[in-house]
Amino acid sequence: MTSNISILVINCGSSSLKFSLITASGDQLIQGIAEQLGTADAALSFEREGIDRVISISGADHKQVLDAVFGEIKDFAVAAIGHRVVHGGEDFKTAALIDADVLAAIEKNSSLAPLHNPANLVGIKAAQTAYPSLPQVAVFDTAFHQTMPPVAYRYALPEPLYTEQGIRRYGFHGTSHAYVSRRASQLSEAPAPHGWVCAHLGNGASTCAIFDGKSLDTSMGLTPLEGLVMGTRSGSIDPGLIIHLISRLGYSADEVDGLLNKKSGLLGLSGTTNDMRELGELAADPQSQHQTSAQLAIDVFCYKAAQSISAMICALPTFTGLLFTGGIGENAHPIRAQICGHLQHFGLSIDTEANQTRKPAERCISCIDSTRQVWVIPTDEEGQIAFDTRQLI
Ligand code: AMP
Image (cartoon, rainbow, N blue to C red; front, side, top):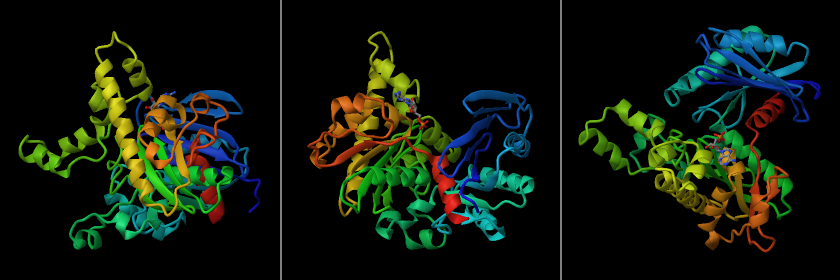
């Protein structure tokens, strides 16, 4: 293939679809999102050459959206389609060229990601119908973490649960951790091999220990619920709490699921919002009835993130530095400062001015005499999917 041809990246959720057309040099020619699919309010918004457009696609399903997307990109040469797939189980250690066996394996792993993998399959099948002659590649959120050693991925549970049921830690956000650590290693002048801890802090949040480009541990587990406090997810809790909720307080399994995934985290602690920007404003407002609870939510978020970062440092043979990414990690300088404040024993010291300066986007924010580096690196999951797809074809 010629390198000046673009890769179409598709990220299919249950009722939404994001897409992006990316050149070999990483430029996004067109990108967009279709939301509320299957409803009368379905709409496709996209940006092309700096101009935003919204098209009503009332009632459209994934296949019809993709037909609309393909109509918009018909003037561009597309070399391949890269699909984000959430769960690859132990079947995929890298991205994979999609064929019947790969489709069957994604289907099999749907039991581990029942909300995500079936939606990803819908997107793949629609794209195959529309572009039967193009190579299609699956890029898995879990694949980057397949280099974790058993000491990191096994739960202390009876072995048959792992060997027969696949119950182990898999980790997610793999494309983000792979991209951000790769960029850090390109930008940093620290002697290689590098040992990074990457903190992806957004509505979903996870940490990852990466040594010489390989994931050695990560905070998410069998599901994306384990680990840090997130927007609406509790993160790690005492497993005995689940038994208590069911056997003492009469919760059903679905109610526990809803509680821990949708009503907890920043939302549960603050009692008002899962949005970190709003929490910052509420915590600073003495008139707000939520001031104390908003501050508590921020404090717990930062404390748990710092604890998780320190746990990731244990996985690394050498520790080069800490990388912040995700909506909170990239934008919220008070949160970065508070997290680093918990980590001073680890040689992390940030420069106040560099931390508060927003440009350039990718930047080192540690003090000149800090033993370890601290970087802010905007994530680019679509760019990483395009990169992996291009590598494979
Ligand atoms: P993501 O899931 O990566 O899109 O991140 C979403 C989170 O980033 C939300 O909690 C936002 O409030 C938060 N966020 C985005 N921009 C800012 C900002 N300038 N300050 C604080 N939080 C922000």
